[in-house]
Image 1 (spheres, rainbow, N blue to C red):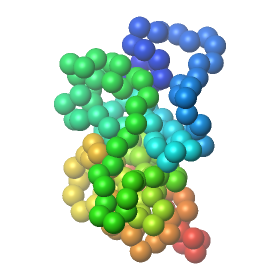
Image 2 (image 1 turned 90 degrees about the vertical axis):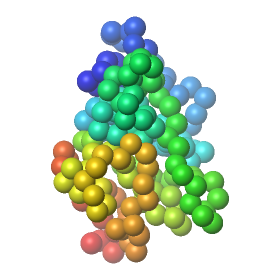
Image 3 (image 1 turned 45 degrees about the vertical axis):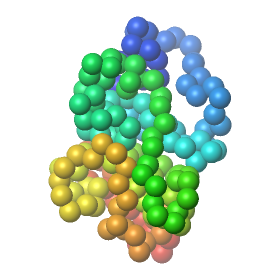
Image 4 (image 1 turned 60 degrees about the vertical axis):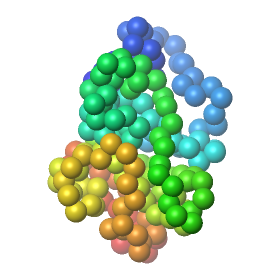
Length: 165
């Protein structure tokens, strides 16, 4: 990514052999954006890694998003879990799907809805304002839909529901 070698420490400049990024997790799905990856585990957790300047990691505060800030590159280059605020009545948040666009990430929690985070300068997260979101937000704009797929580019997002719309 734009910060270094994704999934490796800041000291590794080149990796010539495959390296397991989450050795103690069973990964069900991988989604890739322009400069970030998200991995959904069998436990319903999402781990993100890569650039975080646009909030797309969903786990790094804005002050640390540029190359890890004073915490260093390890914060963005090594996979870490994305946490989500508890939703009243939902219990433990367990994601069951994840999608990435260039600078955004979207994830679904069955029975709760779709969460999104990242760049939003053209409203492509579906929220009213255009601020960048550095933590997962429940996207109420699509709360009445059963989303089956999300795809996007740099400044747009397309959602597909279970009715093919």
